[in-house]
Amino acid sequence: MNITIILNGKLTNLDVPPEKTLLEILRKDLRLTGTKKGCGRGECGACIVSMDKNLVNACLIPAFKANGAEILTIEGFSQTKEFQAIEAGFEKMNVSLCGFCASGIVMSVEDLLSHNLNPTEADIRESLSGNNCRCMGSSGIIEGVMEAAKARWRKRK
Image 1 (tube, rainbow, N blue to C red):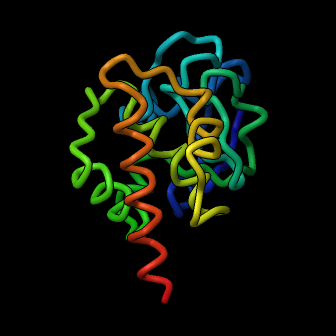
Image 2 (cartoon, helix red, strand yellow):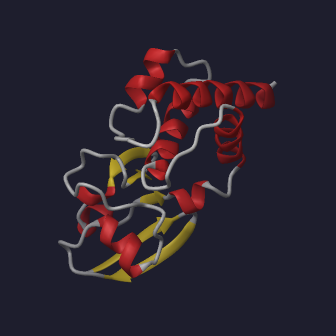
């Protein structure tokens, strides 16, 4: 099956089996390994990407559903100023992620902050509820997100 996606801002044409998942396409066909394979059931958040400006678990999206979509992965997002604010917030609060859950967490944080520059702790917890992270307690991540929100708020002024 031929599919066309806009991947990280670039038009990309692929010939893939229709049942192949977006996660497999990203990791195996396109060598974008920042999106991780975790549970394979859409429960852990390691494979979260933005598809048409909505978060999805790439492990659950068959190729035919991705056709025509705009996909943003951590590789594309990491080139933005918004990413830099999240990274700075995490660094300031000493948030240390192993790398396995990090891309899904960062994509979830971006989705939250793109809609809410003044999130409460409850907002952040809800936003991250689809991400399983075992490398650190959630309080550090929450503080990092709040710092990132402050940095983005300052840049908007």
